[in-house]
Length: 597
View 1 (cartoon, rainbow, N blue to C red):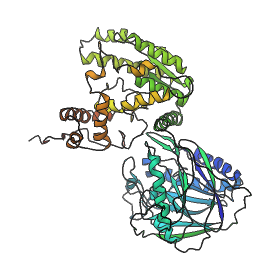
View 2 (cartoon, rainbow, N blue to C red):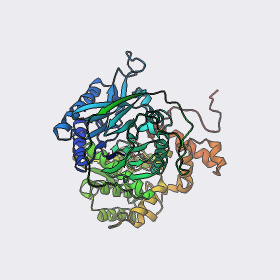
View 3 (cartoon, rainbow, N blue to C red):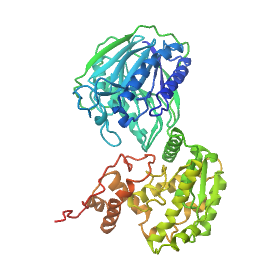
View 4 (cartoon, one colour):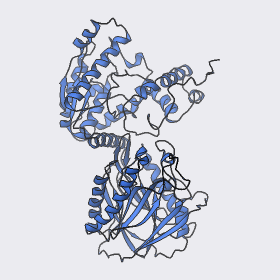
């Protein structure tokens, strides 16, 4: 059996930075070649970054991608890497976009993969299954491919597939069985959500069984706006054996030797004699043609044996914390902000955001501002100062009462208007520091508060990024306790964790004055927002009917606030933003006749 040394380049890219991404491909390809790899695979759309969204409609962008692919092939050869087979994702086109009046069925923009070798683009493949759910809108952007590309490399038939092709039965993996592929390479930009790694391995095992071939799954890492990619690349045999697996949130090249069958273009056998092998879904006709190519080269022999190993899985809290720090770090660095600034109230949310920011960027790039009012407790001010000391961030104090008093001397305000005025003065201070010093303002509202609208528009919701946007309040406490158990000085004051949460905008205010306990609120929010459960289902689950009615009404009427909120890292199955799209003007109410007539 031929031995193919494969390298999975689990690496970061930046949307739109085609020259920078090409340079990264050359750099990581050199590392793969130095490790003796015969083939290196990069993530989906590595050359352009992912997702490119409406950039795909620009002819100039698509042409830059296509031209850069050809240039990259030549540059790799010039680097002395011409004998290395390089699989890379990019955007291609064989016609106008679907939105064009000149669009023709069967042609358009393509989410593509190419194999480069010897200074040439040897073969290309167009993604067949296009996701159109959750954060994905690929039916809007791309035309599906209808053929499978198989490249003979060193006596092995290697099939090329892209991301969603592995998430659906039928199509390319069924075609790969029919084509007799010995290896299926699947390149991905698969966004993180909590425990998604538990889903990936069984998924890859099912597709490997479907193809009757070993599957090499490579995923991107890094942050892109709300999305974070966590890696978790792996190789699985047709019988379901996990051969090697990379860690999550680690940039690395995973190198592993594969003993693969000699290519003969005969279909792979169906089924398995191994009772432990994964079951395959009901057979689905693929209706795909097979395009075959060959790389005319003899693979150099390696005199050692490489095993990529299997990385340990990490705890849920470590997963989420890694996603939040990576999401923030890449948002700041890729958008070229020098630093961040946030308000430090002494409460749990701002404390956790500050700790995330310091872990992501280092204390020298984080500014924390205490902005006490006449209602701020002494312990809140002390807790903010304590956090600053523990983390080493740049700590400042800007009392807001004189500014609030100046407003009240010129306007007659009372009640909630005065409470919101305090929040908005704080927002003005943070934005002024942003304008003056160039910081990105971080807002600190959690998913629970954002869901029910427990925030002040243009006040505490002010900011350019929100690390906690998809983190429920109950998880914020969980993350704080976990982070304090990690090596080094615990960054979060114990009092910030244990005291009752309060906005401190009026005397003796507590969150519980306006909201149910978060242990009760968060499951209702998760059912309604994350799982689209209706009122009756939530009540049937044991929730108080009157409370369900109240919470659902708060969530519905806060949609206008959420539309104006900062982006933040997605960690759940459904995050506010591109995941959940509801009208602002909406008279439908759960459990009631919504007709005005």
